[in-house]
Amino acid sequence: EFKHPQPFLRTREFLWQEGHSAFATKEEAHQEVYDILDLYHGVYKELLAIPTVKGRKTEKEKFAGGDFTTTVEGYVSATGRGIQGATSHHLGQNFSKMFNIQFEDPDSSSGEKLFAHQNSWGLSTRSIGVVVMVHGDDKGLVLPPRVAMYQAVIVPCGVSDANKEQLNTYCTELRKTLHKAGIRTHADLRENYNSGWKFNHWELKGVPLRIEIGPRDIKNNQVVVVRRDTGVKATLQNENLEEQLKTLLDTVHQDMYNRALVERDANMAVTTVWEDFCQLLDQRKIIQAPYCGAIECEEIIKKDSARTEAVDDKAPAMGAKSLCIPFDQPADATTETCICPKCDKKAISYTLFGRSY
Image 1: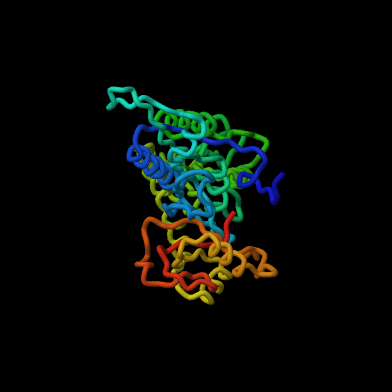
Image 2 (image 1 turned 135 degrees about the vertical axis):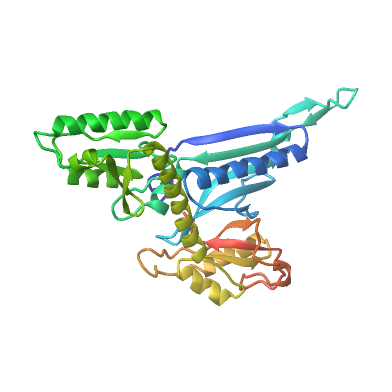
């Protein structure tokens, strides 16, 4: 059994994209660990418009039985919590020795057998939950254009019995044109809902662009386009409309990523002082702090940074856990003392701590 189920994030069943691989040498295996991590970082940045921190898990948080675990970590500003995006593990020879996974050494004339160096890596449907929380607003979903089922929805406006057929035909033909150009488009021609209801419906579903077409737009050879992420409305001429919309979709993606990055960076702090660490945590920030690497220190940090009750509804009382040891370090940690209030050892790295899902 498990506690505190949350849709997409913590459920009894979820879907994985998962890989397992075996290599003759440790160097080859290590290279793939980082190659896969870069792919996962790219999924979040280039497809989901979400910034992540690449790093290595601490000994306490790494995959049990593995040599080391790398991760991409996201941040949800609405709750001030970090969230693990995907992981790439180097298992070493631990499991190959346990299950006798061997191969013949190609450089040995005697046919000597060696144990394989193994990796494991995975990305799950919790990424959908991350998209919902990072980009969503009070109106509903805000979907990144590159993964949205529909990138644009066409809504006829000012419909009357006299112009209904003309408007519907025009919208249908435009949908076909945009679809042919590679823009995933839906024309909402339902007659039992007015245009205002449809606007709200597709905003709730997070479609990146809404294309409004009325009789005057047909006459002027133009369309009105509304962005879901900002609500900004623009009038575009039909000439070269496909390329204009493709450019706009790329702009939407980049703007969504930039907003999430600014929000994340504004809430990622650095400190070497324990009292400041706890205050920053209560301000819903994730914190880079010097850490000696000892498992017992990490357990003390989590216990001593917890609160007996939540500061507010969106700031849980749980203590801070390590999210990762960022590859990009903010400073040289070896000159600092471990952030743990009961430790006087020198730190080995800055580690990213925070409340997390």
